[in-house]
Length: 247
Image (cartoon, rainbow, N blue to C red; front, top):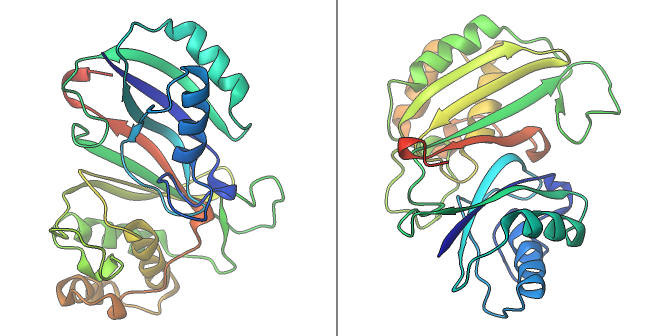
C-alpha cells in the first residue's frame, strides 16, 4: 500500500531535502524517524523533488510503501512528536499504488520573497534588498520567460539532467506586506533555476540589464550571461499539483 505524506519544513538548518553524505537533510531526518516509528529499517521515503541548501518548503509531498494498513491520524501525531520542530507533517493518506511523489507531479510553484526594510522577524525567510526595483520592467521580463523552454542560462552546469527544457505557466512579481514576492509555476525546475532568474530580474529592476536583453540571455544558453543567484533563504516551494485532484 502506498501512502503520501504532506509536510512542510523550514530549511535553514538543512542541506536541502535529499540525503547526502556528511550533511543533514530533511529526507534523512524523516527516514530516521520513520524507521523508528514503523519499526522498519527499510523505510524508504521518496520526495516530490529536491530543494537546495537553505530553501524552505510550505508544501512538500513524499511517498512510502507499507505492507500493512496504517492508522494515519495516529502516525501524524506521533511522527510530529518525534521530528525536529522545523519539520511538520500535515497529513498522511493512502493513495493509488501507481501515484509517484516525484514523477506524477504535474506542476510545482515557488515563491521568492524580498524586503527593503530591516526586519528581524523575516530575516531567515526573505532576502533584504537595498535598492528599489522597477516591478513593471521585471513583470515584462516575466512575460518573456513564458515564451521559452530551454533555461540552460539559469541552471547550474554539469547537473546530469537529460534536458534543460521546462514549461513555465506562471511568472509574476507582486507587492507584499513586507516587500515584494516572485511567484513562478512550471512542470519542472532546474537546479538553482529560480534563484538565477530572480538574480537576473533584480538587475533588470535596477536598470543594469535592459528588458530587451533578457531574451538574448535566455537564447544564449550560457549561465555566465545571466545575473548572480540570490541567497537561498528567500526561496520556498509553495505548492505541488497532481493530476485529477488526487491530493
